[in-house]
Amino acid sequence: MRAGLIGGKTIEEWTNRVPILKKLIDEREAFWLNPDYGENWNVSVTEKELMEASSRLKRFAPYIAKVFPETRVTAGVIESPLLMISRMKRLLEDRFQQKISGEVWLKCDNELPISGSIKARGGIYEVLKHAESLALQNGMLRMEDDYTVINSDKFKKFFSNYSISVGSTGNLGLSIGIIAAKLGFKVTVHMSANAKAWKKDLLKKLGVGVIEYNSDYSQAVAEGRKQAEQDPFCHFIDDENSRDLFLGYAVAALRLQTQLMALGKMIGKDQPLFVYLPCGVGGGPGGITFGLKSLYKENVHCFFAEPVQSPCMLAAMATGLHENVSVQQFGLDNETAADGLAVGRASGFVSRNMKSLLSGIFTINDESLLQLMKDFWQAEKIFIEASAAAGALGPISLFRTGLGLQYLEEHQLHENMKNAVHVIWATGGGMVPERIKAEYLSG
Ligand SMILES: *Cc1c(COP(=O)(O)O)cnc(C)c1O
Image 1 (tube, rainbow, N blue to C red):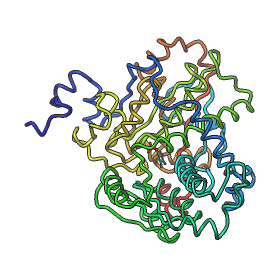
Image 2: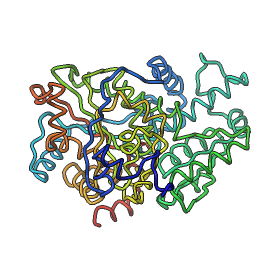
Image 3: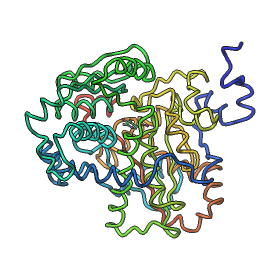
C-alpha cells in the first residue's frame, strides 16, 4: 500500500486530520478557511518588484499601442473595465435564496485586449520582460528609449534568433503566442489534452508551433520544460514557478486601486473589499492577491475558486504539501468544463506565498459553473467562459456557509458588510468564437 501514501500518510489519516479533504474526495462543493491567514507576512516577492513590473509595462505601453491598435484608447495599457453588476447580484440572490450585503462588481478580464483573458497580464508581461533584457544586454535598446523602435525589422530579426516555449491549458498559450509572434520570436506551445481545439487552431494560424499531449496540464509543462532545457536560446515560461508571471498579474492590483478610487470607493475598515478569483495553477489569482494585500493589508479579503474536480490549490494548502500533492492522488480525475482551471497540481511557489495572504478557497461543481455562465449572459449580456464564472459563487458562499459567517465574525466585519465591495474576477472569454459561445449558451 506504500504507493497509496500521500506525503507519508494514508487517505484516512488525511481526512481525520484535515476533514475538508473528505468533501474534496467526494467531489462536493466545499468552503475552506485558511488557518494561517493573517499570520506573519511571509512572502518571497517584494513590493519593490511589483513597482518595477508596473514601470516596465509603462515603458512598453507606446509599443503596445502601436502594434495592438485596440489598446490605443488606453494608451497601450492592457486593462479591463470594472462594472457594477446589480442584475447579476439579484439573480444570484434569487437563485440561491441568499441575501448578499454590499455591492457586487465584475472585473472584466474577459475583455482584456490582445488575448481576452487574465493571461494578457502575466503572460504578456513575462515575454516583454524577456525581450527587454535581451535587447538591453545586446545594446539594442536603452531604458530611456522610446520603445516603439521595437516595432521594426531590425528587432524582429534579432528576436528571431531566440525562442520561447510554454505549457498551457489554452489561454496562456494564446497570450504568449500572440505577443511572442508579434515581437518576432519563434514560439512553441505545449498544450494539454483538455485545451480547446479553437485555441490550438488560432495559434497555428499565427505560425506558432503547437505540440499536443494526450495527458493533462502538468505533463505538458514537464515536457515543455525538458525540451527547452536542451536549447540555450530558448526561454521557457514556467507557469508552475514563474516570478515574472506572478508579478505581471500583480500589477492588476494597482490598476484596480485606481479604478476603485475613481469610483469613490475608500477601501478601509469601514469599507472592506472582497475579491473572488478563479484558480488554476495559481499564478494569476496568487499574483493579484499579493498585489492587493500589499495595497490594502487586512482590509482586503481574497478567496480562490476551484472546480470540484480540480481543487489543486486547496489540496496543496490544506495538506501543506504544496507541489508535492496532486488531486489525482485523492482519486479525482481533473476533468472539468472549466478548461482554464483544469490543473491537478498547484504551483508550490504560489501556495507557499499564499500561506499568510489568502483568506480561503471554495469549490464549485460543473453544473453550477455552466449555470452561472448562462446567468451572466441572461442578466448582464456579458459572455465569460466557464472557468471565469467560478468566482461568482464567492459572495453566496461567504454568506450562506457556517465558515463564511465565522470568517466575518472573527474579523469583526459584520457591521460594515453593508458597505462591502465584492469583486468577482471574470478571467476569460473574450476570444471564444461566436459558434462556440452559442453552443455554451444553448447547451
Ligand atoms: C489561467 C486561467 C485562470 C487561472 O489562472 P492560474 O494562473 O492558472 O491560476 C482562470 N481563468 C481563466 C479563464 C484562465 O485562463
